[in-house]
Image (cartoon, rainbow, N blue to C red):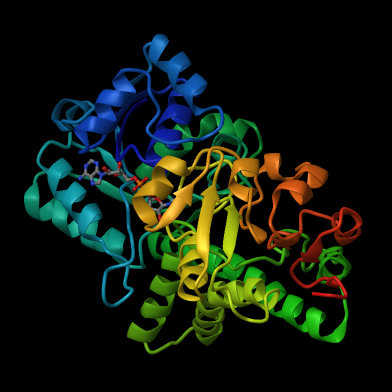
Length: 439
Ligand code: NAI
């Protein structure tokens, strides 16, 4: 099939590359000409494991290409995906749909007769209706179907998630469009990935419900972690104890610094707004967002508690600033409010991240960037693990204890055993687990 993918970001680029790997003919279009140029030069604009190889293979075999002008690609496409950003709108927290509607307007004039337009961006209920209205307004002759096909991939594991999804959700009442989408996803269907066909509004709401539910699990276990600290229990064992119950499940029960990233915060907020607009408030999610917002500064206080609540004159090494490992994405990363709070408390902050440094430099002010974990820790009074990159799991604790000014590790991802760290002479503080006696 001929596919045009509008937006070559984390979702559009991965989806486009995977569709081409299935054998479809794909053009990824992005209005950012610099991004398109770098893709045409074989350079990936984002860090995503396996993506460079996947793109190179499909470009070489002539199934995948990149363009900044959508006319020729869209006019030849049987299916046009919209995968542009839907960030939080400044000021009110609603999803900013301006990119989606601009894309709909741009494609409308050049859409071929009977094309299927698919919203892959995460969009509030009713957006598909508006996309359809825009297309009809711009191109009254077109008999176009508009489908909702939300994406559930995770950055850092995006290709595996796309090729082996837990489910694919396709929202449309149009029988012809269903047939086209079945063809688009045929290789996954043959792999026995469940495909859920539903109406468009249900598909749109499903994506927000999924992300908000996952965010709720994280906020829940974080509050249990705080309670565990107060009552002398271990949250990791509680999480295992509840997660082995199939009705609960073990995933998304890792206590930490609170959720962040390019999706959960904005999607939870957009669901709250949809609920309020429809006089059906989603109060659980409202609480989840409020609890999570407070958590980042609370994590900074956790660091300060090691120094009697005052960080003036203290140097703090922060390891990991991207919102999760295996991505360079800094959008809404927990490290941002956490580092601001550390600075507010008087600390001098040093940072190291294995791949996020370039993005981090655009975000942080008055921070020293180090070239590796040990340079970062040297002379510091505390080491704070914020993102659980693999390379932070086996730090040389002996070495760290000799180069740091003060042996304190605040492990916000619980990747170390307290006993092991303490054996090496550190004061250790994790999340929801027993602390060093002296802490
Ligand atoms: P992104 O910001 O990485 O990519 C969006 C791309 O669209 C940018 O490269 C931008 O230049 C381009 N663009 C904007 N307007 C355009 C237009 N009119 N024509 C052509 N290109 C245009 O965003 P990302 O992260 O890929 O997210 C896209 C959507 O997918 C969002 O709705 C997001 O919520 C959703 N999503 C994101 C996931 C993630 O892990 N990043 C996972 C699942 C869904």
